[in-house]
Length: 274
Image (cartoon, rainbow, N blue to C red; front, side, top):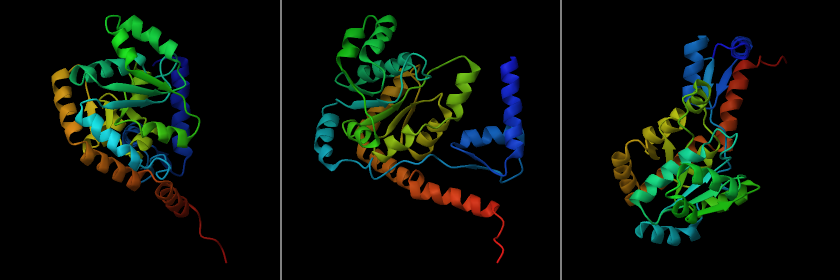
């Protein structure tokens, strides 16, 4: 903040919002940010989530038996989907800090990483930051790379929870982004019926998870509370899963998203002359 680039960015942002007939954001915290900092007319800002193919990501029935067996055996599988480490604003350290806490509670838990990141690059970061537990943590990880929605959906069917670890950056820029952003993974996890474990610093996703009981908005600094919540989540997994799937169907389907956009365009378009 305070740099020439930041001032130009804010100027462009003000201009874009002022010239827009309507402002559509992907999360309610993003909408609130626009309302608070730019004071647009009432009703100009609306929140519409990004869409997900809820049919492709529908829970796989044949995976139910294996999942029930895993959860009864206290061996949940966490899935992280997306870029990771390096220049990504999704931190390897934050992901494995969460995973370490999960394994303190459930020693047989495992982590599925669906990412273009390589095992070697992640292993280097884990070794540097978790030297005493690196062998244990990495031994219980699987890495996959998917190339389309169907492959991603098939991978998520092997998991029990979706993870949004983000990072705990002190830098205002990245922190602001994770407070207002709502990644497409939100809809994918929920459509797959996976309750979400989300870092409490990711305010947009955390608010949805808390308000609709779709998982846990966790804080690894409060291990006792997290372990208690995690134990309850595993015991009540079917109820959380059903709510997650239902929320995705109500808020992330392409048909509903398209209808929301169409209503805005129709309101802004002048009536055709006959």
